[in-house]
Image (cartoon, rainbow over all chains, first blue to last red; front, side, top):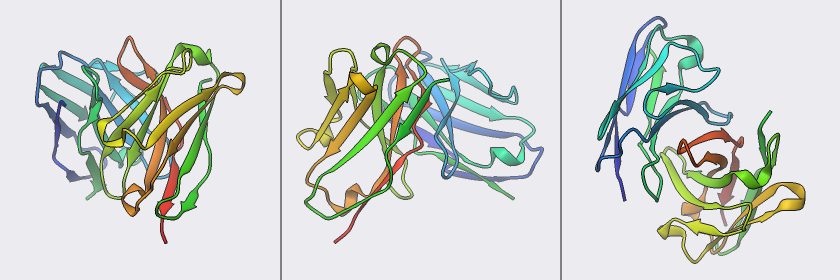
Length: 107
Length: 119
């Protein structure tokens, strides 16, 4: 199985800040990497797929990069609605696996 | 628009089974696999398995093999996940999600169903 290691597990930030989350795969996964946002009581929301393609309707302050084993999600100009938990997910092989999550909290 | 609507909160006892449904709409049901993902309290996301709505064939994560089954009813565009021999470790939020096979991501999710296993 491909292990996805996500860091940090939590980060405190203020509105307007930039936040960077990293995800490392235990094997090369090309660019088969997606990022999701989870807020309590809501369905998970796809942000980025193919490592860097922004899902339709997602604000442009979200961006993704990386290939192979190392990936990054960046949130620029953090907004109040961005305080949530973020997960990466590899789509290279089954079983599909997720990172452990990063909780973005208000400083 | 694409919607996945899951059944409600379940409370059940150790050793019992639970069935969660995921009703889909807004697209051709047979064109996308539906997957199930579990989130235990304070934990990350864990892939449980998937079902092919066209054929009914299912694949499961190894740790759930033998006690999970995923089925579908094409007449009502609904997928079901049944988990047997429940323990307190199965207390979790279960999500169904539509998988885009070409882009290898989950583009729509259900709202989640909380399953609580307690004696």
